[in-house]
Every structure is written in C-alpha cells, then in structure tokens.
Image (cartoon, rainbow, N blue to C red; front, side, top):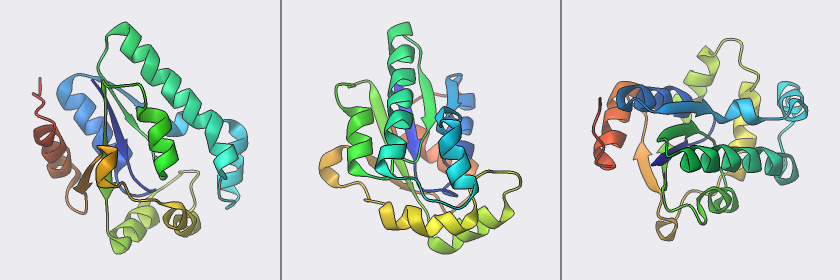
Length: 167
C-alpha cells in the first residue's frame, strides 16, 4: 500500500506521515522535496503556485508512487493534494494508493505555521492554499480525518482507520 497524507500547510501531514511510516516500518517521502527550485523560490518570496507550477511536481510524486509500487514496497508520502484534479492525478489507476486528508481548524493552522522555523513556505501563503482548497468529496474515496489534536493520536487514528498493523 502507498498512503498519501494530504492537507494544507500546517495540517501536520509531514509530521503525521512520518509517524505513520515509522510505526509501520514503511518508507517516507515529503512531497516538498519534489518541488523544482523555481517553485520553492516562488513560495519563499510569497507568490502562490499555479496549477501549471504544480503539474511537474505532482507528476514527480506520481512517479515516486509508481516506483514504490513496482518495487512492492509500502510507503507514505506527505502531499498537499489541495484540489480534486490533483488527487485524481495521484489516485487514478493506482488501486494500491489510499489518501487521508487532514482537516485542521484555521486557528490551529495559524499557530502551527507561526511556530515553524526555517521552512520555505511563509505563513502569508496559507490564505492562498485555503482559497485553492477543494475539500475531498464522498465520491473520491478519500478518508478525511480531523487533525487538530496531538500528532501521535492522529497517526494512531489513521492507522486504525486503514486497518493497518504497527511493527
């Protein structure tokens, strides 16, 4: 299985995804590392990414997912997957992929982003992500999990929701 842990900036997708991967003994990747330098530079300067900017990034993530699948390796990747079209690109034709979308209150998002140190995503871009967000709909087959609480509890809830066993 490949698990995509998705959500807006500050939702905890990297922290929770890494916790899940660690508890399951699976590989982990943070989709931020798949961004071309031009995307990172735009975000660092406070410029929101466009769909055109995100397409090569999403294709790189899909390629990583396909490579793990071909290897027969289970893995977790943290990726914003803000729009339905992004989730469709990542999920279509990949029955081994599950996506969990982390839902977090605005106040918690702001608090988490304010406490980040050294990350290229500035807090002022949160509003652009929230404006672009298309929350998952029931027909997408995406699991939505409230992630306002402790990341360990959220990770445990995701593992239980998917019926997985820790190592």
